[in-house]
Length: 196
Image (cartoon, rainbow, N blue to C red; front, side):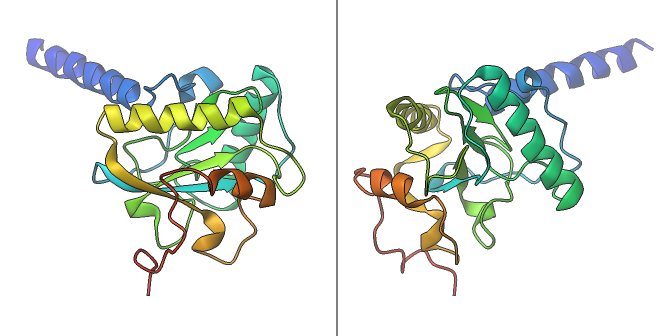
């Protein structure tokens, strides 16, 4: 009986540690936004060297409550309608300047077909063909990526690309695309990473 108890305590401690690792870097954890646990997980090889920026094409959010509700709705749609294991993006950035845990640093997401197992996908909440990304949103992503490098989740020489460079899409929207193309990590020519 003592062995079983020790095994249960160890399993709970490990689960708690993995949850903290998945949601570090000042990210709003799934537990905090009341997310569902994934039905299955596959682990990313780290450090990851590719970050894919996209948008959700949903309403914009400005408050904690509004952003959390949108993230829950996105997860419900992904898991119930699309039959994903979890919410698709690795992380989501709200108009309140906060980053929300999606599949996180450790798990393969479902954000860019053909690239999920070798990238982190970050989705800005809103439609950035019409919405303008705020300075707080852009800084939240920059801070997340810096922390990802510091914690060993991202390679120091990682590259950032837009969703539209890899698949037929307008994502991440013209206004966000125009901003991220100025970053030093930006990869303009994706021929070297593009799937055949």
